[in-house]
Length: 137
Image (cartoon, rainbow, N blue to C red):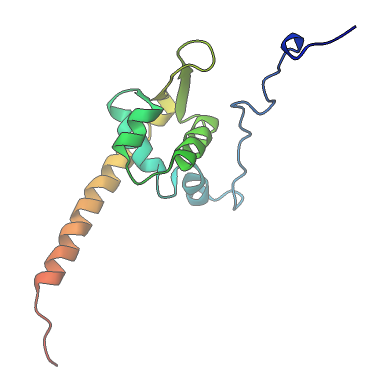
């Protein structure tokens, strides 16, 4: 019997959007658990933009111009794995995918807003320090 390539059924990779939960780097420490879930350069920004409305991958790339395709995909994958973001395919593969915050992810919004306010005050503080002339003592 001859098996033609078109007769072979392709299987999806075993790791297709299944992410095992990452262990807490310091057992029992709530700060390291929080930083493992939402720390880093991009995660809070992704959560911030998803708070407004669900978005496609390309829309997130436009809103976050400094992030690479690879890093955005990785960060979204990990946020999905942590239960913070929901990934919704909108058809058969390859279909557009929409990302949104889960209820658990929405619990981060007060923290995101506090960080945003603190960051704005920090920028203003740094700007005011640069305007003050240095004394010659």
